[in-house]
Amino acid sequence: MIRYVITSLIIAAAAIDSSGQRSAADECATIEKIGGGIGSSLDNFAKVVQSAGFGAKKTKVDDGLTLLDMTGRIGNLRRCKLLTAANNEHGRTVHHAMIFMQERAEWSELKADYDKMKESLRAVYGEPKEIAESFTGKEPQDDKERMEMIKSDKADFTTKYERGELTVMLSMTYTAEHGAHVGMLFIDKQVSELILGTLERK
Image (tube, rainbow, N blue to C red):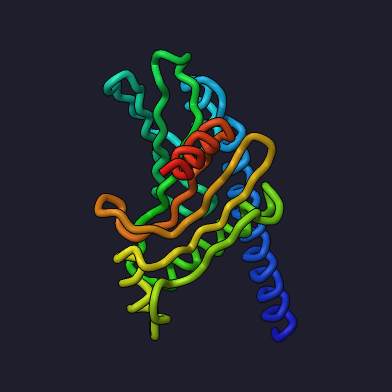
């Protein structure tokens, strides 16, 4: 009987470990597909994102731009929203895409999402080029204060990855629409340099 119980526990532990490995592999595959779609046409990018597990495709034309909105999952992280836009006058090429992960009410959940994505991005793109993880002013005393500082824009948790012409920015942030969440910005070098150049000139 004891041997049966031990065998059952070993099998269960192996199943959990296997499930976790599959989830991490799924996350990496999704991230790599989405990143690989940057620089292609909007139609092709939408197909790539769909093959990565996103659906509910919505498009809207606004002021010369075609906006694309899709929802899906990254590994076991559900209800992720992807947004991008392409200029209709320049071949409708996708130069960037933003993924908003689901809203989190607790710091522990938000930090777990951030740490999980850091590891997946590291597995795909290698070691980060830059990491900033700090709070502005006094150090928060507990998780409640940490969340309040995220909501009041007094925290900078950002990790930057690069590979070839692609830059990926991972961050914790807060918006009125999406609440406190982890976001990933995929951006090509052309747009990245344009944004940085504009900021440097200010």
